Length: 180
Image (cartoon, rainbow, N blue to C red):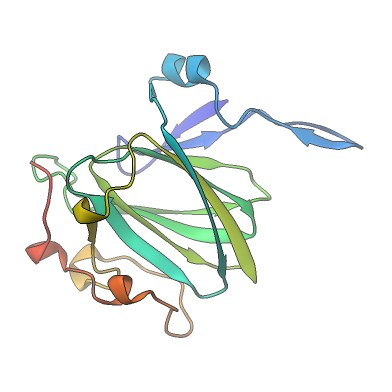
């Protein structure tokens, strides 16, 4: 596997080694030893799978307590994936990085604890899977406002996104709960 730096130093793009032939393909989407050797040690406790239709925007989510690291990827379709640094003491606080993830490229993104995460579905539908380093605690979940101008995220939208109520009512960065 190849680990590629992003504009946010702690967020990493992971390109797995894919073995393919006329029968199909194989790759390791998670190997604890390989990830630790690449400087990405993580213990995962939960796997999640969501399916969404074109134009659905999920996020930007984070947990203020029990912060979750996430290893994310699209297993069908294509998404515009966004990560925002929520650590006030970080030199990149409030900055974001956006990467298109697709089933075709098989790339994954490592989202460390302390970051908000969300995605917009670009294809007709997308299956999005992710591993987390901590469990979901609804009482600690927070939603950063996806459209906050302070974030400067250039979402590739031609129409208004399809949002859950909690995502439509997200909190702007200036008023959000953040990590130290």
